[in-house]
Amino acid sequence: MSAKISSLTLPAPAKLNRMLRIVGRRQDGYHELQTLFQFIDLCDYLTFTPRADSVITLSNALSGVAHDDNLIVRAAQLLQQASGVQQGVSVAIEKKLPMGGGLGGGSSNAATTLVGLNHLWQLGLSKETLAELGLTLGADVPVFIHGHSAWAEGVGEKLTPVTLDMPWFVVIHPAVSVSTPAIFQDPELTRDSLPITMARALQGGAPEWRNDCEAIVRKRYPPIAEALDWLTQHAPSRLTGTGACLFAAFDSQQAAQTVAHMASQHWHSWVARGLNTSPLQDALGR
Ligand SMILES: C[C@@](CO)(OP(=O)(O)O)[C@H](O)COP(=O)(O)OP(=O)(O)OC[C@H]1O[C@@H](n2ccc(N)nc2=O)[C@H](O)[C@@H]1O
Ligand SMILES: Nc1ncnc2c1ncn2[C@@H]1O[C@H](COP(=O)(O)OP(=O)(O)O)[C@@H](O)[C@H]1O
Image (cartoon, rainbow, N blue to C red):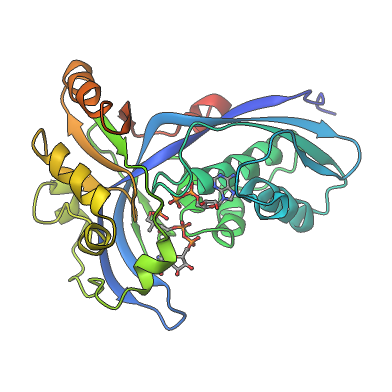
């Protein structure tokens, strides 16, 4: 029998949507996307300590998120139900990623919980099974489970691993909260972009590397438009997901730091490296 693990700390990285096209709408209201996901080395950290009883606890609450709505709790409950495991877990969260910022922090927390508890509870479920479970929690969860930069279609769950350049990004968080459902429900949203091939997308550059949510987000949230206009003076800039965060790529860490330093006079900002494998994969050694 393998040894029991005492506790496990794992990263939950952020993602950027390097580009995002909306190519249709399904009957259930969800939108068909084409997007390139890339991880960055900006992470939340989750520490899992197993419990002999079946209780799931969080040692720190997230502001504005009820315990039972927390994606960490929902992911742990889902895994208990799917596997029939009798154990529980205590989870401590070190939150670095802004919530509702388009960096996918909630989805990433859910993915790290599924992957981490599969390991801790020694369930032996495949990544495919974990990704299927994760998709029921959010459209972005599967990419965090598979852990590689990806070309995504469908609602974000049809994933093809790709290798992208690894620039240094300046990421800015204008102090506004964007409602993802409200953006997707906006009648003026561009939702009929022509689908492109993955090969075409990987060539990069304008006009394909745009984000179809940007026009609506700019209109509804002037502070985001202002930040995009500011960052565009330094390098081509885009929203990630439905925002509020936006980013631009730089060739060197120093160039990114120079721009981030200026940005920090107005907004919360970070310098982060683009990655092709998730820090979660690296932490688990596969
Ligand atoms: C748009 C993206 C792109 O990466 O990014 P975010 O800005 O949220 O990070 C995601 O696909 C978001 O994924 P996620 O945040 O997990 O979305 P979900 O919880 O599944 O859905 C939130 C709401 O957004 C709408 N929605 C979401 C995804 C999608 N492909 N079509 C949609 O219409 C639906 O109204 C849904 O009720
Ligand atoms: N563990 C969690 N971390 C972050 N957000 C969470 C979590 N659990 C639930 N949420 C909810 O999910 C929403 C979306 O979070 P997040 O994934 O960070 O943003 P986005 O989808 O814009 O990238 C948050 O506004 C919050 O209400």
